[in-house]
Image (cartoon, rainbow, N blue to C red):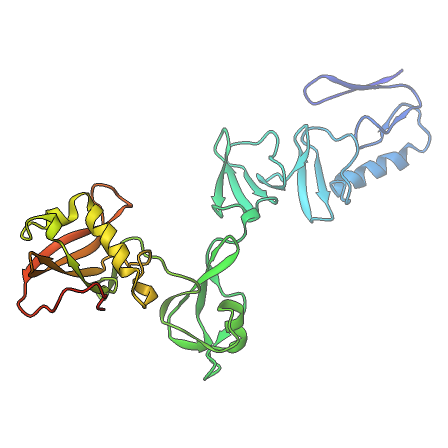
Length: 324
């Protein structure tokens, strides 16, 4: 008479004929009636259950709820009907886990990120940026950095972007050794690291820069030239000289392009430069002052803005030579 083996939910798992041993339906050897040496099979089954099938290969034909101890990773796993996963809700894999539960943790080995299941999707716990893009944020220096003068180890944090160091954070000013300077500053001589933040590359300030609470103004370049503005009309009305910004733009570019100092050529005026133009109107001299600013009506466009007009009896003869 055959043995009918049932699952715990009452469904039939397998029918065992007399004398048969089923070693394919489950991870155990299921023993039929009148099997010779049945004790061998029974004892092997007990050892498998005792050790949770400890091996570096998962057991054959696993059943839902079955435990397996993965000897390669020293981890206990449970079968969920599709795959073996840790029973405590943490999975380590390069692919999204199947059949997850709310609150399950998943370490994404491809992106080097820890994620948590919120009921419908996995949300990243950290780091925010995938490891595929390299290191981001602030971390301790990968090697001990010492003061080159005292050999004392320094507390240094390194700021990273796309895996590249872009700055140092320290709590003391010290001289970095030539070897470390080559690493961070690309120079074979010692480099000074200041208490606070040391940028390893350019620092571009888009807003205002304050030092000790004082707003720092970019260096203002004062330019002086002589120009006859008689053809522009009333010398007391500076609007005549800046209408549409055409006149000032045209003659400054032409006159200053003759300067021997290339810093003052027509394509390299620093923002907030001053242009002091000695103007003659019907042989009467006056000084028109202009400043290079960003046009408030057209962001991104620079214009010369007239901001002062005054007369002087001591102005010399009319000339086109630039006076710096």
